[in-house]
Length: 311
Image 1 (cartoon, rainbow, N blue to C red):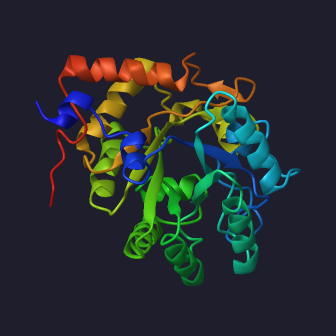
Image 2 (image 1 turned 180 degrees about the vertical axis):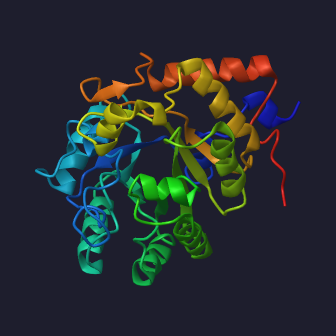
């Protein structure tokens, strides 16, 4: 049995272990950025599924400086793990959307904080100008940098329907340019977007496998209060297929089977605050879901990349 078969999938810790010889923890930051899909530069209203409250911890909001958010986030972990080191995770909205000088100031403020050993920057694939990518290339020579792009789907019709404001070609371009600059690169995908069949969803894995990705995050489709998609669901629920937990576990495993084994899967699900979540409500924490998924993978005798066809 190979190492991959024993472990079932390559996880985020495998990726981090290539870069660090110590334990590292992400600290989520809200740097006060907006999004070109909200301010009218590309569109208005944002993506139909988006409510940024779903991934902002209590210490992370625009009323606090980068330094204060890091202070509070690190204090939460340092009591239990005094030797831990930290990655400043610019998470909310589009974290490469601003002037170069403004962006660099925020990144450098985070990196100057004691205990911070690198950056993770979440952004859109259409918001990576050459000058900023050149800065990240230089930065990657002195610290850890991972750029995470919201790809969400490889189907242009889906991207149009969710008001994403870019096509899949933009994601391919951004991923290839970033990897070409020697900067680590990840992708976010939402499984179960309206109008996508099971085979369409699995085809995303085939397409992403042949891109120079280091990491991927999978999210189940969640309907969140206050979003345009929640209204769409209320008006036309037959357009949506909301997976129950066992059905989604099999979908995620099938996706992993077709995904290149060199890409680390950071997570299979996201967990939104109960007060914002409409559906599906599985009542599982992320680690509980992963334990069930691994048990199912073992029962199926499968592993990441089992059905991957290298080209």
